[in-house]
Image (cartoon, rainbow, N blue to C red; front, side, top):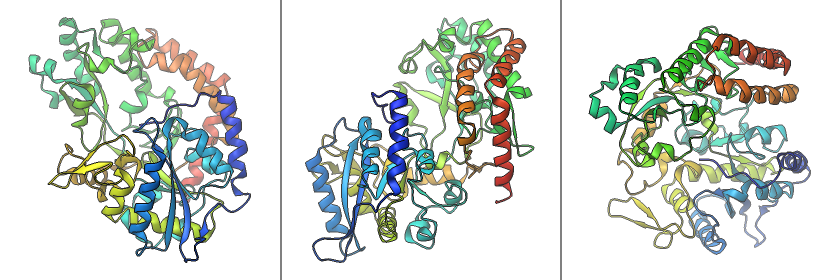
Length: 493
């Protein structure tokens, strides 16, 4: 899930981020010892709410009071809890950071303005490496997560333990697969579905293969490259362990040629290249094949798309720098060491004590949720409503009614059986090539996206045009900088 964008211009948001985050180290954050004479260390905790248009402030304060009552004799911490609607989170949390009103807050690698890279760039996240080591929190998260989520070997963020790997599956409407009796286990690569696409086209299906208006090279070719910058024109070649220009690889030509051929044959519609399809297209019967990001409980796909679907893995699942920070906590840089330790102590209990995890995630039993005889939770959802993925660790939380009884085991197996990517832990610092990187992304929108959606038939000529436009935008400088950083990082491993 992702938060809604603010109704602010990109320039205004960027300026706000630069000025406000820069001020985060000016003075200690609010908090410290409690004013009531006790020895409790007070910390301000701020989180985003994705499940409600507007959280109920009074109910949040009741949850805060219940949390403090529960943790009172367990840790030397007292929290003040702030819940902000996700569509206001970036702006309000950023202002609160600038005003030193936060000690512990939620963020993510994909979040804008106050995302992980923004926090590092603005020196707004505190290095908690030494505080975390040896703590209850450290042992509550699988050890491999810590280096994967680090920046320059230092711990600034605490992952919400959920799915922590990336991999991709072919997704097929079961009704169509059953009609033709397709053996989906025979699908080992994307091109293996071509005979089935011919069947789907013969059926009159509008979109035999639906890309969901998504450029898919850096997804389908995950076994060949670590796309550390989350763009398809730059990656680490897994065979050579070096940064390469992926646009000039045989794999890129192969993929774009296949997409062009499928478009010519009518298997891939120009609606994807022109972004005419929408997020609801997958809920119709207008498609046969599409893609799915592999998760521990793949049964979610059928409910999401409101019809039975069948999945067949195409890539391995890899844990890498971005996957572990899809949802996480950060301690603010202006928190004192005492406050930072209190934050770590609170998270340590949150990740190991199910009662606290349920309180923090679901709220107050009987008011915000009901508990079934089997211990599962049914959320009522109108005042306080959160989900596991943005709250804590799925290993230490009551499951919701309707989830698989073996949900925890599914997550453990999924994460533990993933492959550690060659560039796991590497962070590309784009600050020296920010203008060139932005320009290259614009070139991708003009050429790469359309190439990867079958929009050009003369693939060789268009790849040459694409490369020339990239080079004019400063691509070689981006490539050189990324390569130098990666080689330097490898020496620290």
